Image (tube, rainbow, N blue to C red; front, side):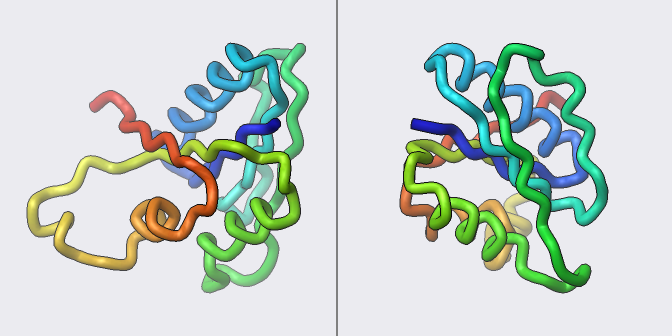
Length: 119
């Protein structure tokens, strides 16, 4: 059993990483961190005793981050839960389809814990 977290370069991504680390510690399992930033991800805030693996997204800026997450899930059949960060969206923004979070919620083969960062 593992927990996977999709981490974007945002406060929502950092919050999702923090929540996923707490979940992994509570469940006494390891953490798979999918880095969606295309640059090195700082995981120094993770507890030192938490087993984790960082999966870097490769490709160009226009490569699909959702596919990177779904590929990581497919390659790790032991993942039983995914954590993602959500942005606060306006009523108009909620009507717009195609966001990474929305696609992950709809396409994930495992349960998704969606968290919002404090304002």
